[in-house]
Figure: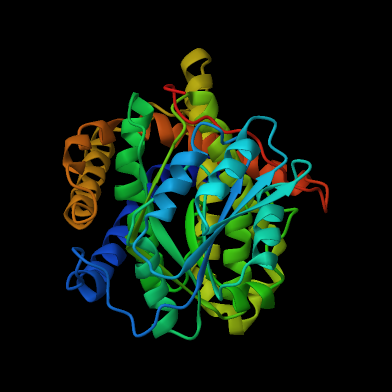
Length: 421
């Protein structure tokens, strides 16, 4: 029957897409990442930062919510950084623990530190906006209240602003510092083999999808021009990245700007983190659809299409999984049957591709983190845990973004920071 033929064709294409999209994107990222490395990165020095013609004042913004266990260490590392001209503005955003008390004590010891107190939880975007308004520097370096910044990171990021007048932001190179569980170890590989590779490739192909929220630098005049951070977006970092690039500012990736971050080490914490990322991506997909269609924004077409294809892949993968489960219980027509979630030949090729991608990233990222090769084994578990989570968080996040009430403020939620906490 004609209807059965159509259903069979659509099902076959969805299943094939769910299998081959990850392979296609892996090679896109590897080619782009290798080109970035060979074109820009290979000859750069990593043993010392560049010597700048001038060292303009940099304002380091540290929005905090319930960071009593980590904020002291974060501030102390910042004070000891090697950039000669900086100030630190820490915003205590209505914390319910001892964060404010600790910051006030630190302010007595460090003249570089100023503390801003907000009475209630208003969200990270509000904290960044307030800190920006009271800042004195033209360049802003934003880090999380539980992150550890490399001493030379600020110098590396500022060098991009001085050499490129159209550079609106510089995204750093986040690394995982807590590695006490399987999820933590896998994320070590993820941030080198996946996140770093993608940023390099996107830099080559057109535009970077987003700065890293844990470590990013901004030109204050660019941030002011696009209207600061929007408080109604669940991921303020993705949103401001898109607004900067739609306003034709350039965003660069600086792998030498290393920042050590705490990552979720429980499935619940990982789910919440990835759901927030997925919803944030879907929100910009929805919000800036008309703006991206403008021919002047054509350099955004690549990352918009990439996210749209990943969204389609998530739903195609869910359909494939559902058909496989139902087919294992009930007798489905042949054109709806999925014999195996991972066909033998495809599975072998996918495994080889994934290990190749990680091997290439090791060659590149071993310059910035010694000993990362010992996590090579753990990355083989990435598809079994993170792909499944990412598939479902992408699908759910899209629904949440579409059904979200306009203007609803995004506020802080205390994240999972590892099973050692």
